[in-house]
Length: 100
Image 1: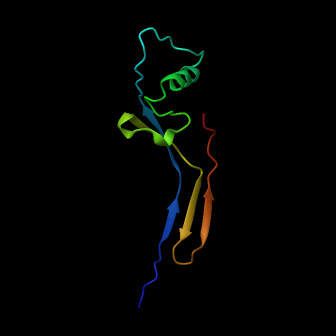
Image 2 (image 1 turned 90 degrees about the vertical axis):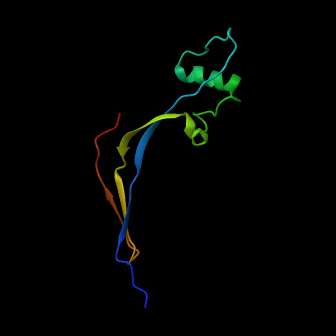
Image 3 (image 1 turned 45 degrees about the vertical axis):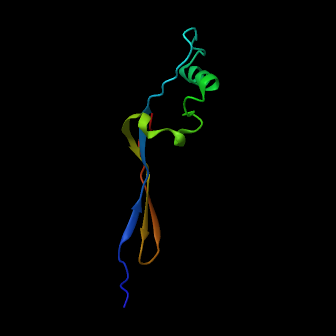
C-alpha cells in the first residue's frame, strides 16, 4: 500500500545581486564614449562585443568564471504554500517596506 505524503512545499523568491567584472582589450587610442556608465558600456559592447557577453541584454549568458561576488538583496513578499497531500495552494503576502 502506498503512503500519502503529508508535507507541504513553500516557495519564495530570493533576490541577489551579482558583481561581474568584464575586461575589454581595446586599442591604446580608444576613448571611452558616453555620458553615463551604461552608455560607455553599450559603446564598448557595440565595438568590442565579440570579447564579452552583453550583461545588460543577456545577463543569463554571463560566464560564472567572471563572478566576483554575490550579495543578498531581499526576499520576495510572496510565500506560496502547496499542500502535497490535498494539492491545495495558499499564498501568504507580506507588506514590505519600500525598496530603494
